[in-house]
Image 1: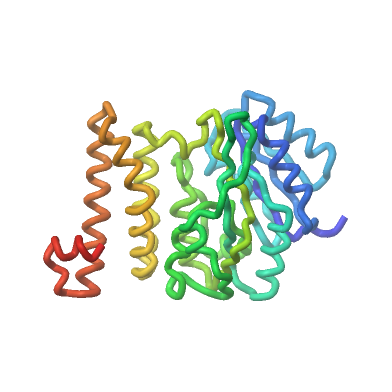
Image 2 (image 1 turned 30 degrees about the vertical axis):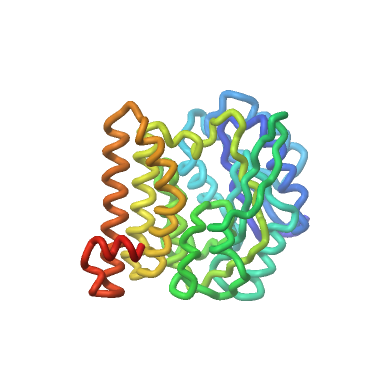
Length: 320
């Protein structure tokens, strides 16, 4: 067996119905010099059995078991502690890697010497019969990853800030070590802040338009992204959005922060406002109101910085 070049960290909790397909997508990779760390984060279903069977059949799989759930961030961090390859990637155990994903990632970084490469992804949704099918590449994903850009940066390509998921990327482990990066534990949407920290710490980033992952939106509604009507989920989500913008601000990436704010206003805010309008908890509506005011204040400040005559709130609102 050849020496592995890539470690793929695969966390999962209670995903037995999907995990076998995720691991099959790893075994089907055209690039074979990988190892995978499978973290069973306190599952009470058959996830651990699926992981154990994969490890028994293929020595490239290594299983870590948490006796009780620690959360997605802690599971990913546990995997990071065990990485001993030049490159690291992530795959959630209910998602699917496309067959040439690792090949394209590794080939690109070997060619450019960049610190990380970012690819496109699509949603995997169930039809009325429960069969999952990939959808189209969404506009915000296209804006971040197409056309191909090699050795780019947030300054040159601000829309890159819109690709915030952990599993659409391959990065050099040295980037994580150099920047001291870890996933913030005890929080949902932990990859929002980490993505922006990776972008701001990277010396160069490659973007490729290839679809590298099919991201499953579970038919039973148990995906984290399908529970934003719950106040604790909303609070973590809004905190992560603010935190990502703060990372960009601290790094002096004003254009990237502006691009991120515009995308959040366009894509994230409208459905959350619709939920808030009929939500029974006043705290939910207050949280959304505070967040929308924060975004508009930031957008106004950016508008004034670009054009001092935009100080009039009405004129600034028209600009945005």
